[in-house]
Image: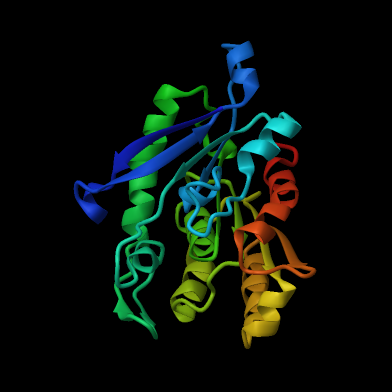
Length: 254
């Protein structure tokens, strides 16, 4: 079951509303005493329903979770669809230059603070969660993948595991590397990270960058699963096919 409602992010977009979503496993209705880990996802409009998705194709998370009866709550929030690179700004931890928009102020910290101090407490109050760090995860793709990597490192006290699909490494690489070298990380932090082979063919230098980031994470003791997806592309249909891989990583021995 997916519940959908409207939320505001006052510091980011004032009174403008956007959709939030939460998936509850069937076990939650059958056993009122059951409690579940929570996966928080970015670009929530693309997660569950084709009708809400930007390009008419969602990840199909609802169908996968129902078919597998996976004991997991998924909570997701729609991105900022405003003009002039609003989504890029909201999903970037760092100020950077975007060729099509110029300099964009990174508001990723404000986004994560809202997730941690507003959205997560709401989910924990209203749904049968396991709210501790061990059972709190992140996932996203593209800029949302960058935010997942940022969230699990900069806010490692809150999130123990994350999945970063096709993460936007091109954003402020020096600042990202500095974060990965210095962020306090607890032992046992788990990260799934992938990139599509066809993405690499079309984007110069991404294979080298993927290796650099992977090496930094391994040096910090992160339990990393890094994949090059055969034939993988930068789209929801491709990310949907990776659901079994990243969920199995996030829930492994969970």
